[in-house]
Length: 96
Image (cartoon, rainbow, N blue to C red; front, side):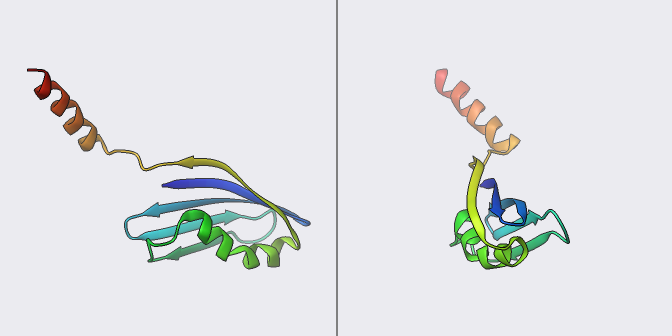
């Protein structure tokens, strides 16, 4: 799963991306000034937006008071090329 959005604060906007994979979650946030925030956790029990919520104090430290969190895109897991070929072959086999 892939989630993209932004956190709006008094001092600017931070854009973030969170990826959820089998091994855990990774977050990358770009701030208007300073270094980006890179964070990863080896726990697949969290959802991407839960991780953003847990890290809001870090966003607030850089952006001052948080005015809003907006999610622009949520992409569910995509199938690999091999999985798509298997699905296609299964459909063809079922027609015969």
